[in-house]
Image (tube, rainbow, N blue to C red; front, top):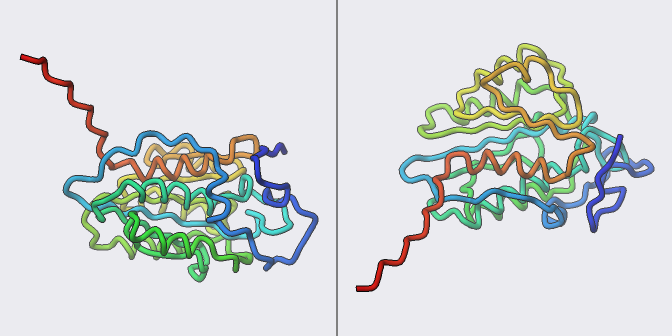
Amino acid sequence: MRTVAIPGLTAGDFGLGNGGALAAPLPKADERAGRLVVNFKPIGRCPKDEDVRHIVAFDLSGSLGGPGGTGNDPAGLRFAALLRAAETVAAACRCGRETLQVFSFDLTSEFEVGPVPLNRQGIGQLREALSSTNVGWGISTLGPSLAAARQSVAGFEGKVTITVASDFLLTDVPNVLRDLAGFPADSVHALVLTAPVPPVLGNDPSITVTAAGWSDKPAIVAEALYQEFVRFRRPAQAPRKAGRAS
């Protein structure tokens, strides 16, 4: 296992501490987000005439690590990565038609929020939720959060993306992965954190897979989430050429 050094972060920030209580607080996401060095592509323009709902479901189980324990979250930055990606879009969005909803597998986490507008108005609620330090160990079952997400978009008219961030060491496979592939979304994204990609994911053309391992830069998670958030934004307009003087 190889870790990636980030200026301003210590070994403890990577989940490589020397032990600690399972319920010990995590560093706040908003304090860590600004330390990520990212390479986001151009933001583009707001959707013209349709709503867009982004859903992110987080695995909070023990295999993903936590305070004082090694786990499958590269650099322990998945929450900061989401915040950084969302803040970048929120700084540019003016339409209010793009929304974000965050679920945990547990369906009881303080990280859960939304749907909130993915703009300056809604980003404060997201930042507050993702900066909670009250995080313990959760379940390794995707099914309940997937069902809740499906219910949340029932009747929604517009584009939908869903990203599941997990090591996919689940207790309800393989059926739940087929359910994920059939989720009513225009983009289904599996963010596999430092674990082998399950064949049913890697072989399914309807699912986009991002594998984030210990040897990858921590910003890969933020960049993968950002890619979903801008998927249905319009390309930026090319600057107009100055007319020839008469």
